[in-house]
Length: 254
Image (tube, rainbow, N blue to C red; front, side, top):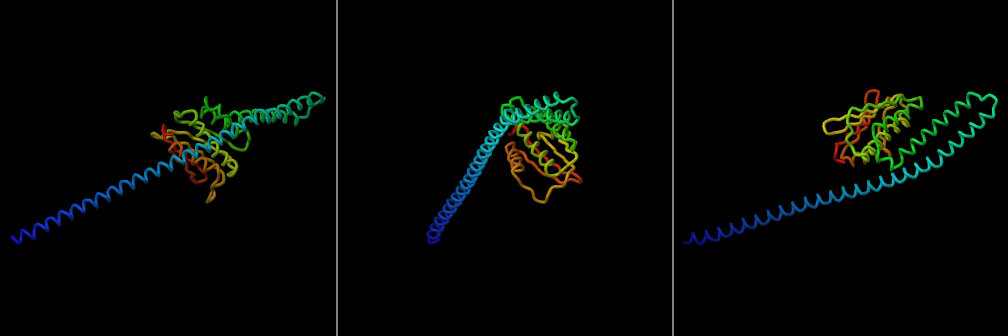
């Protein structure tokens, strides 16, 4: 009988202890679940904020591009065209025009074509019928016209991107090419577009000066941000005798 009297309190105490342990474990599990949920919500808020901030930056850039395009077309092109007309009048009045004047007139004509092409490329309305392949070919031809850089392109993929996505990718390629021309002084630049599984790979190679140990700027940051909008990546690689910018974009996830 005494054993039963002792056993019952022990059993009750054990039961209370077990229930208390289960209650505490439940509280801990709930706390951890809520903490993970809270962390996920914070991550989503941060991602949403970054996306909104990046979208605002891109909108500001596009507004700036639109303004520059308008100025180039309505102001600079008109000034160049006027200069060309005046040079033509001067040429007609001379009994024998010097070869340098003919060369200058031809150079001015090329400049007008280049400025008009550039103004179109900066106009957001140009996006609607945008083709990466065509504009990449035009960009490479523009660089070759300088006579100092052999620029080429190779497209080994069907580019299944929306026009605005193709514009974003083109801006990234443009930035990489212009960085190479400005800072690396190459004699050759090659752009290759290829499809790897469900990723679009773009490689921009140049044979100029190697990359510095540390480099950072608005252009490279914009490239990273645009790649992030695609859910992709951009890398700068040091190769033997070359520098490569590698852009990887998952298709259909922008």
